[in-house]
Image 1 (cartoon, rainbow, N blue to C red):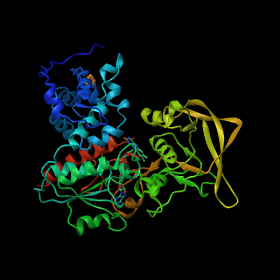
Image 2: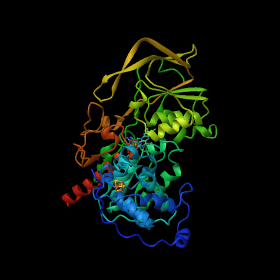
Image 3: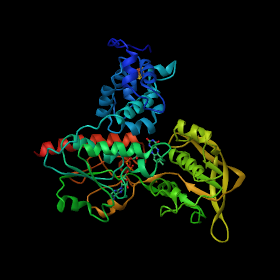
Image 4: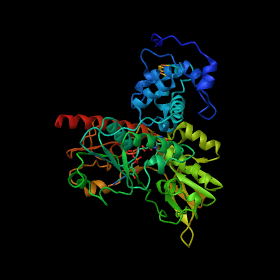
Length: 464
Ligand SMILES: Cc1cc2nc3c(=O)[nH]c(=O)nc-3n(C[C@H](O)[C@H](O)[C@H](O)COP(=O)(O)OP(=O)(O)OC[C@H]3O[C@@H](n4cnc5c(N)ncnc54)[C@H](O)[C@@H]3O)c2cc1C
Ligand code: SF4
């Protein structure tokens, strides 16, 4: 189908002197000139299919056009209006399967680098003076449980609407997976801290070290602490295990434990910090999603001589971002495709020494639509190892639902909540993000938080 072009507003005449003065290098040596040249490739399609590919509906051609004409403040305003975590999403969103995959230019040429432009604009914004802090203007207090992207975005939107919002976080630092899961080399903590700082500037209060459902019951938020509405954004942090023999050996860890020890507890500084992590010479990570790539690349940085991915399907079926897979290859991570673990093998004193695996081939598609891995009879291998890290998925932690009446869960352990509004069956309790969908993505969690914030606002307006 031919691409329809919308009327373009005329480009202002460029004054390189002004640009060189106004725009410093802010993004890995890329200047506004690089960004503007990339932005000018955008066709400003009449039917901007890229926007359909964005889970939070960023008006992509509008912010890109603002970059093209050098209006960085305008670009930042447009971006932040649609997505309160642009510096994070510009780094970790899978644009290649979302907006960039849809970009009309991609059918013949290379799609516009929407993600890099988003990151560029957000990084420019970081160099500017912070906006004046906001103060709540409404009386009804709202509590948010969990400080991952769903909770942070929900809190930020509600604060922007004038509500006093408090985020309760179980860990000692806010950010959820953005802090304890995604490593520094992909998402620097300084970026996360800056985005959280912007939300605090909107009036969001964050209280750490409070496990709702354990140290403080959810119902006490209403009855004792006077909140009118609660949003649950507790994520899906409970790791799954394979259930094979040897999983209890020393040297076997879930990816969540491994990454949390390194990212949150700073095991790389042990003994300066309290939490060590045991990384031997040969580390195998089971699974082939983003978490698996992060764990394998982290193992290399923690001193492993060899880090490998063991996956029962093939490269084609892996769920990791292509970009992350590429980085893992560049860094020397090795891949055992079509290899399914049967048993973790250990020494007499209880330490991992290897992984016995079944070789597989691809069969008919299963319910997920992906080719089903089928064992090749008699083909087994044992890989000598010092550590096994399991990155085969996570589910929501049942702690809150077990201790709170009125919340329902699916058979997968996810909270039951309306997809559009986040309403749960418990009055005035809303929910969103991985806790509802199961493990997904940052932008989907952020989108759920944003929709719930607006549904909460409507619900409160209806109550008068
Ligand atoms: C290693 C790793 C890499 C990933 N890489 C990417 C990527 O590159 N791109 C991408 O888009 N997505 C990625 N994801 C997925 C993405 O990070 C998640 O989908 C997203 O963070 C979910 O957000 P959330 O707000 O629902 O939950 P979370 O980020 O899990 O946050 C939930 C928060 O709630 C807190 N909490 C839980 N229970 C309680 C309680 N009872 N009381 C108080 N606080 C509580 C938790 O401590 C946590 O801080 C990755 C995930 C992992 C694990
Ligand atoms: S980013 Fe791609 S799809 Fe979106 S308006 Fe520009 S050219 Fe069209």
